[in-house]
Amino acid sequence: MYNVVGVRFKKAGKIYYFDPGDHPIRQNDYVIVETARGIEYGKAVTDKKQVDENDVVLPLKKVVRLADQKDQLNVEENKQAAEEAYQVCCDKVLEHQLDMKLVDVEYTFDRNKVIFYFTADGRVDFRDLVKDLASIFRTRIELRQIGVRDEAKMLGGIGPCGRMLCCSTFLGDFEPVSIKMAKDQNLSLNPSKISGLCGRLMCCLKYENDEYEAAKAELPDVGEAIKTPDGPGKVIGLNILERLIQVDLSGQEGVLEYTLEEIKDENATSVPATE
Image 1 (cartoon, rainbow, N blue to C red):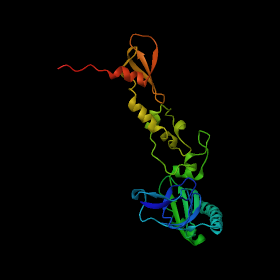
Image 2 (image 1 turned 180 degrees about the vertical axis):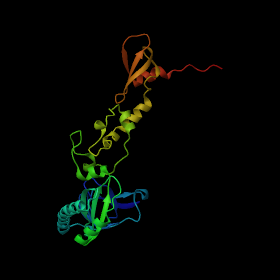
Image 3 (image 1 turned 90 degrees about the vertical axis):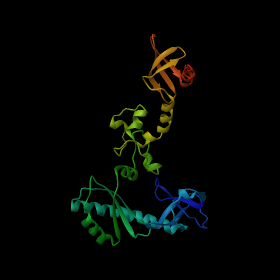
Image 4 (image 1 turned 120 degrees about the horizontal axis):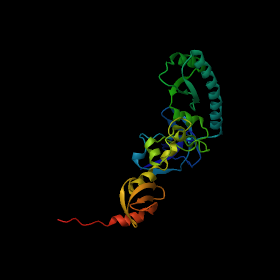
């Protein structure tokens, strides 16, 4: 077991584990930590706790110290500098006529590097752009191409539901979403109905998917012949969330609805096989 504290560097970013050492760190404290890209400023989103070896990436980086007011001012200055760098880079992209869209700019805490995030349909030759930016900012330059889902996470916005985007408010990681999830939930397959601002399938399709899969495993298939308390019939519809089964009874008019328990009771009895 390892003593760790969970640290997040962005509002809805991933949580990374660090060794808290002897520092009196509590949830919501700001800390200075050592990362693969240098010294960074982050927020502790958990108290000190113990986790299994399989849950950490070794070697475990350490918390350098608790952050102070001076560090907060440094972060604000970096944000201001990043806004100015964003405009400079936009001008340079136009000057070089590059087919790319600048999304965000970020300075590392110690200002050893400035990172430019962009989207593009394909590969972009930005070697001349990097040279220009390096001569202007006099520091290490990194241009990082991101996907449209990452772009939506960075920029934020309001989804079709009227709420702020999940990815920009609380989702730390993107989980795979498939069209099968929409089909299982009997949703319209119209792309405009099931796509988010990023143009990809909405992340919320994943939220109830496990419940739908569990229900479908228990319920009979549409078109299947089953026994009911009122006689044999054929399944013509399912209410998955309420576990209700719509059945067209043989020789009777109309459709009746049964609970899963009623159908199970009728189909539990089986005729023993004869030798």
